[in-house]
Image (cartoon, rainbow, N blue to C red; front, side, top):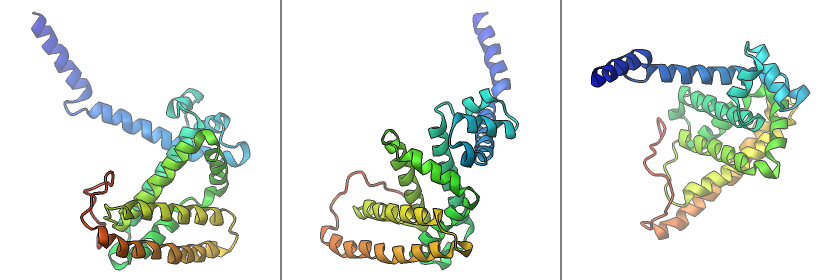
Length: 241
């Protein structure tokens, strides 16, 4: 009898959740939809209230959620919301790269395209980003800040088709982190039409720093075949790379 009861309970559980975890996925999708909606609505309040719980709750109300749901969406508070905004920006940037004709671009052009796409997608939220940077610059938040920056530059190089697994892997990401942050800060204060001064600045910076990996490439030929522990392997190039 016990076995039959357990069998019936298992069957009922499968009907509730689906044999492939459909219900769990649907709940996760609904949670992510709520997070994205609250965050998007919150951005309109940040220029006036800053990145605060009050802004999150106001954003939740605008998106049709209550204060409890705002806290459920971001249980670790505004720092989690800022980090999630960065993740969403990375995802949109990658989607823009996937939709673009990368095959017709050189690697340098792909990198420039990615940075420009990421910034242009946030053009309406420059003040919110400025305030986010101030929070990320706090000593207690350095870990989150560096992790977010690394995710962004890693996504750019991956999308651009970079397959380096030697110490060039880290050199490229370190150099691009400097370019990205300098361009971001320039963009925040750029009042030129279409932010043309920013794009010209980006081109100049890329011209300067992308020479370094090529020079290092000549040097590393000496060490060809040496192992470089920790470099991710198995990543393939983007289309046309």
